[in-house]
Amino acid sequence: MSGTSRRRLLKGLVASSLPWIGVPGARAQLPPLLPIPALLDATRGGDVHLKAQPGQVELAPGVASATAGYNGPYLGPTLRVRRGSEAGVTVHNALAEATTVHWHGLLIPSQVDGGPHNEIAPGSTWRVRLPVGQAAATAWYHAHPHGATGPQVYSGLAGMLVVTDDEEQALRLPSRYGENDLPLILQDRVIDRAGRMVYPRNPMAVMHGVVGNVMLVNGVREPQARVGAGLVRLRLLNAANASTFTLAFTDGRPMHWIGTDGGLLRAPVALRRITLAPAQRGEVLVDFSDGREAALAATDSVRSVPVVRFAVSGKGEPARIPPRLAEWKTPAREPSLRRRELTLTTGVAPMMGRTGHGGHGAHGIDGAPFDMKRIDQQVKLGDVEVWRIATRPSAMMDQPHPFHIHGVLFEVLSRGGKPPGPEDQGRLDTVLVDEPVELLAQFTQPAPKMPFMYHCHILEHEDHGMMGQFTVA
Ligand code: C2O
Ligand code: CU
Ligand code: CU
Image 1 (cartoon, rainbow, N blue to C red):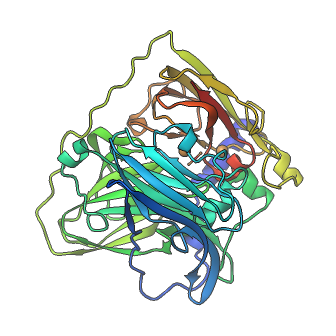
Image 2: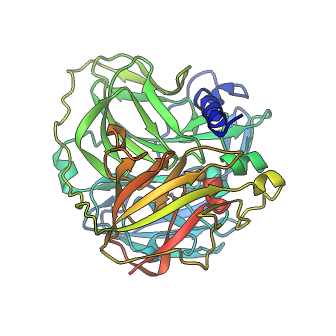
Image 3: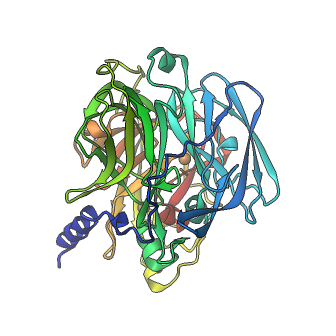
């Protein structure tokens, strides 16, 4: 088989399978209510507290799975911060192993970014002040320890982080948290025959990342959300280890796309489906004023599997969507801008049984696996640069990689050598790379000594070497 036809076949297989349709283990009779993570308001001064701790949850009735969470057994509270104020956070590590907490999507100095260099030993506490200077956005936080990000995030160490500001508040978008402003944390997980959540550690998982057979929303399977008849804002977060999700309403109702990783779009875009790669966020407004029940489903070309259902109370007036959202300046693309080219490379080592985590170098960037002691790039503080990211498929694997850069937001300049389509608009911190993409980024956050990371956000790829680091000074 030629390289291209194999590639096409593999892609075809991946594209037509929603693996979590298998749903092992008996389901509860009634759909569970959508759990809403507690809101931790860090906009008022004073510290908020996170405690990383072990826990247990039941994903099949009567069967406990070992998990971890912040201030609870699985996932964590939603942290709310505000542009122009400093958020104080303490993180206590009550786990039996080292962890870190990375503020994914926050533009803050590397010193407090929570990457693998900010290790929190078991039993100790990390106190940080996060200077929030960016526009309103949906970000998130998650564990990021060297070589063990995959298993820790999988076990539940993640939560949502909401940035607000005056401009966003002036738009009067739905903002009643848990009522008409809903966090939806999407994760696929592997449930074994006994109904237990397990983290597969095998060559396939290292090769392709961990792909689940059930879908969890805010930690539960196929929940139901109760909403009023009106406009509802969904903050969608793909917190999966490896899976890309395409979401659509089963009745075909439009979603008004208003925000990406880095904040609001300039104007809303009506969509029937939205695709989110691992780590990406999407904010959408959905009009439930017809009072009809609806279901948001994960779809592909063949079928669609409900992930969350909406029970709507009352009947309302068709909602008004603001025509304009945010303003921001895209830096000019000048020919003199510094260019960097990175190639994400996949290795064959996992197929040969070298599956231990941490620096085994199954994967890499430009052929080199991640090394905590090696600085891969040095960027000048304040510079605008063009980064071209490509992938080099191996004989055994060809899959798109969600590429993420810490400490920066970027815009897509081109994809496959052509101008980007509408789905690539907005300010991003993570982009799905299949054909080469060119990114335009301005580096505003200092990282003079402790570096920032860039990596594939398929967490098993990251843990096995597809990561690099850069200083900004
Ligand atoms: Cu969301 Cu370096 O990670
Ligand atoms: Cu990040
Ligand atoms: Cu990858």
